[in-house]
Length: 387
Image 1 (cartoon, rainbow, N blue to C red):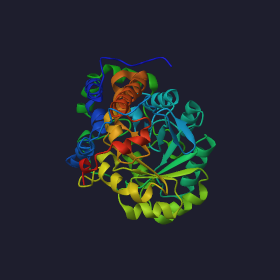
Image 2 (cartoon, rainbow, N blue to C red):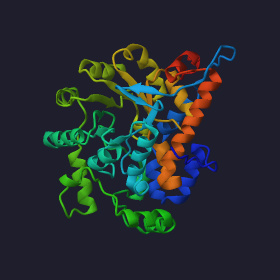
Image 3 (cartoon, rainbow, N blue to C red):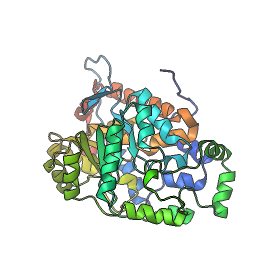
Image 4 (tube, rainbow, N blue to C red):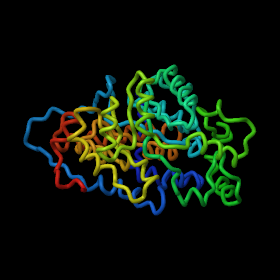
């Protein structure tokens, strides 16, 4: 595979700064911001970075191998791409670019119900090897249509979302008047003019739309009524009874995302789910919630023998990924980090980001003397994990 690593941007911090300089402010805020005062957003990363690893220097060591098996698939790294909504608003064709990144790097790509590429298009790009994250619709008929489309497109791992029972209070989005397409306020128009590469890309790609939902959206809705339609369509929380129905209908792997406490994990096990993703929606829903790493570490001992325990949120480097794996995660997912890559560097920004993360994780594994990613658990210093 051709390398796309750009030594000008050797860290996510460099990618973030580059992305911010190329994006309209409202698009950057949607990608980077959290809810309320962004306390939980900051806590996600700060808690992960407290985790410490112990190296073994004098043992025989033949090298590190990142290859990881998950749900019968072999992946080239123990981390993949988390679902992100409105990707095409943040950077034109971002969803399609990252799907291709996942194919080329042989890692899982997860498509959000409210992203800007359709199930069918992502199915073609990935040859059906993608995950689909379902925002549970209010109407059962729509749920069944989405499940059928995902299955027909080749998807065999369905992710049901638990951590968005309400619409979040995000001050930056409120101030920006975020919508699809973005509201034409004087402030937003100025931001677009100051981001010519982004604007040109949008003209070429066409205005971003909810492509998966497009067949169900009445034609001719203005932005206000489109927002009301989407709010009505996805109102309501995921419940045990809804999980039971989906488990019966979905014949592939079933994963629940947004688990942070053992009571919810027990429900997932009760209904025969194959995996859970410890997540707080990237710090975008509950500002006074826990970070992701703290509940992960507590859930692993009880539940890792019953289903796959994964994590997303707060990882911006290979060292962060290593910390999560050391705390017991079977696999890690990132949403903002690959998006910073695409927004910074365009079509091949995801490729650069995954090359960078693989290099970083490889260095950590070789430094501590860990042959396989699961073995990082043996290098954890337990007292360093935040309570």
